[in-house]
Amino acid sequence: MELQRILASDTRTAMDKVFSLYGEDAMVVANNKVKGQTEIIVAIDLVRQVTVAMTKTPALVQGLPVEKDFGSFIESHLSPADEPDDHAETTAVAQSSPLAFGSLFEPRDLNKAPPLDPLVATPLDQVETSLDGENYKGAAEREFLKAREIVDLVKRELEIMRGEFKLAQQRESWSGALSVPEEMRPLIEAFNETGMPMGLRSLAVEIINQNNSMLDALTQICEEIGSSIPAINLLDNLAGLHIIAGSSGAGKTLMAGRIAKQAAANYGDNEVALISFNDLRIGAWTQTQIIGAQAGVETFRVNSVETLLQLIDELSTRKLTIIDTSGVDVEKQIMALIKAMPQAKKHLVLAADASEASAKRHLHASGIEWDSVMLSRLEARVHPWSIIHTLMANKTPVSVAAINPNITEPAIPLTGNNLAQQALSQLPIHFV
Image (cartoon, rainbow, N blue to C red; front, side, top):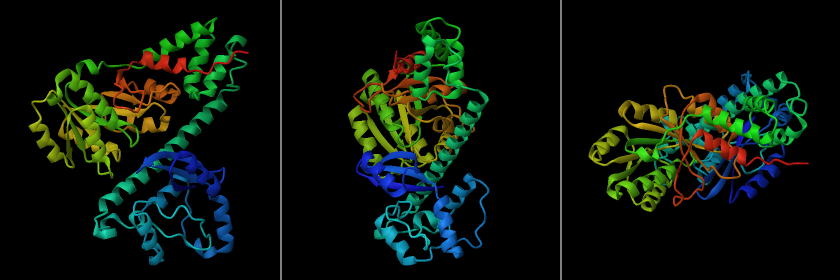
């Protein structure tokens, strides 16, 4: 497998490029917004291409170690490499896209090794300056970390998929048609259609077989899910120091702005502060300033723990201080903040449509005990079964949710029961 990056003006155009360049076998592993454009990361099956390359140019593969598994193969492509063979082609790549994975938009000549992106292939301690004499060492580190996180996410997704397949094999005829009454089949089909994980499906089938009507079954499923997910009342008792964390694109900055705006309405504008910590992405600070202005609170920017502690000390008289963190290397940043500010409350923002692997990656992070989980993008068309299944197993409490990506829409209190109600109310149940 190989990861490739596509940029386009919108998602439809990007997917058209994916299909035209790599065919139907390309697997989309990430979809993000970058500088107003849609970025899609796809995993390409290279078995056929490698076979052709070996028959045409065996010299390309001589002396290369044989990778034992998929994870090792991807890791080997992310490790800093030696200097490119063709310096002129590498320079051209750097001039066209200094923060890209490489030249991803042109057809690849299998008889010639492709140029490497200097910000990914060059050791980080050797990356000092690039275009216009600017320092891109920090950009290289962020790109390298982002690539590693994408690879980790792909590996976790594959691991969960293998577990699901194994569980499906152990449970014959999961379709449910043979294990539930005829009148319950529309409910089973709705669970299948909305992607309910296998473990949660087994619980649902067990409950369905204990009830005589669909309404009773849905009510009991809702109660079972609701009682398995704890919740805390955050909005009514919001004070002190709070850290908001999550992956890039999860909506954490917008969530921090929503909470700050609601707190400012209760305490006053001068009693709430919003801090952007170590977020070096292009345009991140501008976004925080805009959100802070919309929330009506004062915003600050710091890039080190020492400076953050000094600022926290200056803001100690304020009733609420919210720290918005970067979406890169989340675990490392949170561990540093926990060590410096053990009194701070830590909240993880997850998109309601996030995959189970993405949710587990942060919830199961070593050494981090989250005080609550906040859900963004909990829209009517979203079926948050993967998040529900993960929360039921993790027991981390939920606190607030946001429906629309607009700061004017307030965050709402969230419990396990109303999360289950939202998921069950959107089931596409078809009666014949």
